[in-house]
Length: 183
Image 1 (cartoon, rainbow, N blue to C red):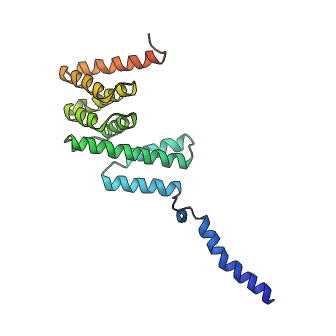
Image 2 (cartoon, one colour):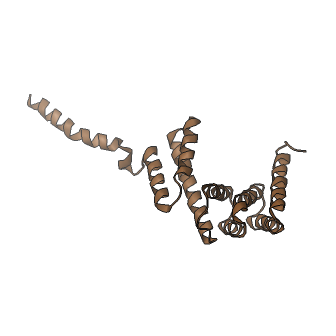
């Protein structure tokens, strides 16, 4: 009986340590929901619209993506959004729309430099800012350096909204041609 009591006592003392070892947060690696919650909290404190991250979460869930991959995508998107927000703030844009910030984050994720993003944000009128950033992004995505793409967008902006729209259409046409979808 004494042996059985000692075995049970030992088991009860060891069990909490085993459970603690299974807790993902105790190993320094948070679970996916904790990572998502942390990203949302960081977005709130940074002034980044949480809705831009919630859309990413909803998209991942709708596609049946694992929570680990959703958490990673949310963390990457948050990084792009905060970088884009910093570039726009540097450009003196204090009240960007959610759409402008989202397009600017797309630009960051496509490899547009922060200085090019700031320059185009500053140089584009409010109504054309998102389009100008999107065209800049497309040019960089097609392999142009940020500086060269910025120069083309600034030239189009100087000529007016129609020139910017034409550059955007030209860029989109080149993308389709390169993919074998255009003439």
